[in-house]
Structures are given as C-alpha cells and as structure tokens.
Image 1 (spheres, rainbow, N blue to C red):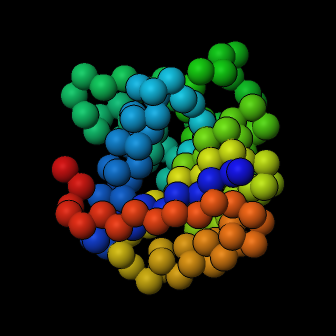
Image 2 (cartoon, rainbow, N blue to C red):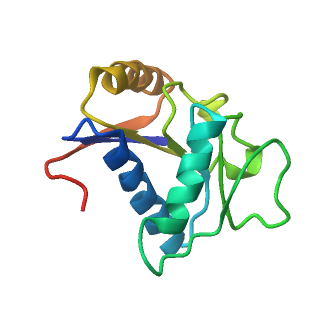
Length: 147
C-alpha cells in the first residue's frame, strides 16, 4: 500500500521547513534511497539545491536539478517543479503546494508542512486526496524546532 507521511513543524519558518527537508533527504540517502524533491518553482529548486551543499558540514548527497532530462545515474536525488519521472516515483518529498502529478504511482510521499495556514490548508486537501486514493496516511507533529 502506498504511504503518505506528513511532518508538521511547530514553526512557521520556511527556512526551518527547508532545513528539515534536507535532513530527511540525507536520512533517505544514508539508508540507500533516492527520490524526487518536488518544488513550486525553479527558484525554490535552486534554493534546495544550494541548501543540500551547505546545510551540514561534511554532508554529501548526490543531487541535481531536473529540467526534463534524466541523469545518467539513477542514484541521485532530483529536485524540480516538473512531474516526477517514472524511475523516481519510489520516494517523493513534496515541498510544493500541489499534489504531485501521477501521485498514485508513487510508493512513498513525504509532505513537510510548516505551521502557517498558507502551507497547512493545501496540506489538508492533499491529505484527503491521498486517503481517497487508498494511501496509508500518517502525521508526525514535530514538537521542537529543527536543530
């Protein structure tokens, strides 16, 4: 059964939301997983790309921005605002305000929400869409600030 996991930060800081995303990406990479980071725009993709180089000293996560052309290697995280390529649908980290196109093909979707209504309201709508599509949906409230 496909899964959608929502992480809700106590803060309404977009910076903390993106820092938490980097930590989840790093955790996935260290466990041997790769996937797609869905953003709202090219500018947001560039921001995440830059953060993955700098968020933690000594951290290395193979990644690149996606502009429609698939990379030579599949063992990278792709970052983009385009539809998730088929080979990267195993793990989708959704930072956009939209539900991923073709989301029923995804095996696991991680949603990261901050505590602002601008983020939470579209998140509630996606929650309902995932449930309706038969996903196992769970939520984790993060009680403390991202370290």
